[in-house]
Image (tube, rainbow, N blue to C red; front, side, top):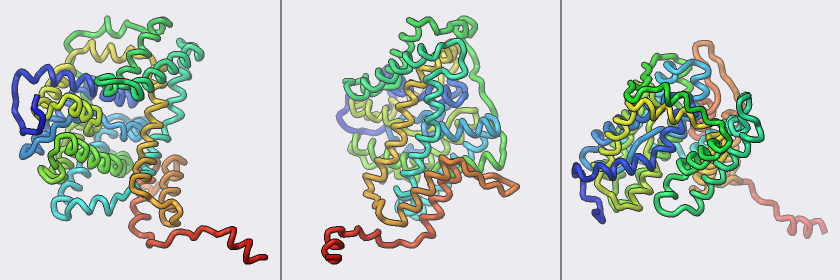
Length: 423
């Protein structure tokens, strides 16, 4: 295996390694469609197509990463599907992907600094926190199997707890490949526990065909869904920059310079747009796969081509999607309790890393309003369109960051000096 990045080299012998990388991404990849009600086989297909599109956009210096279902869009997709349906949600996701494309052209002409000026950590951090916390009641309800009469609540909580503990152990103490697949590990252990309790229904597998066309769905365009989804692209844009920087550090190649953020953002945007055309979740670069690249030193980007091809082929295996559908709700709920908290902690981490001063009134105002508007459920109805939730919170944050003047932080009161003066 090469010890350094040597460019794109497509070889048949790398196919098995490509399958391995899909295994690393698989748990997280299928979790998004499971939670949002989208088709898991479609998600596999669009992950493969999205990765190939990304590689075409970065062909001058192909980046060795795999694109798949984005966690940042779990909450928005869930809300949008409940409000406007799957088809309109796909239209909104297409618009979000095209926003990435627009940002890539702005970066091409204005430089990378524009993104950081428009979307600083004081805006992106609380948006990510809101994304993680807004669905926390859903995670708890899934862990308790609320409204599912077939599963006793006590049984559901035991299974959810087992899944949660297995995931935590994989994250904290796992070695090698196990540490890279904590979600898949948690699902596996939780599934075994579910079998022991006898709550797994295998009928979907027996009824499914081996070869089946994924349940593709075409997008439609609803202004409310589009306006709701567009601002959600704020957080994944910054996440994308971090992922490209990480893979650059792993391979010792500066991908932010060549092919450049203008090309990687373009690839991410077109991949997300392409996914929405087929009814799949938005694509994003996967940190689990980047970790596997670090572990295996598989720096040849063509390996990710094999990963993409494998994902596309598996999308047409009907029994695979049926098997995924047999995973009991408490298993996913237990993992979600941890996952949504981790997403929120990533937002806090971005604030801490950037050393955002929370004693500064300007920062306090921006963060406070983003969190309350996003999580509180504020809705602005202008008749022709509605703004609500995380999308509205993101807009509020961007606007406040642009219009609020910079002020000095509040001076801390010296109580010892105050007592001395009184005496």
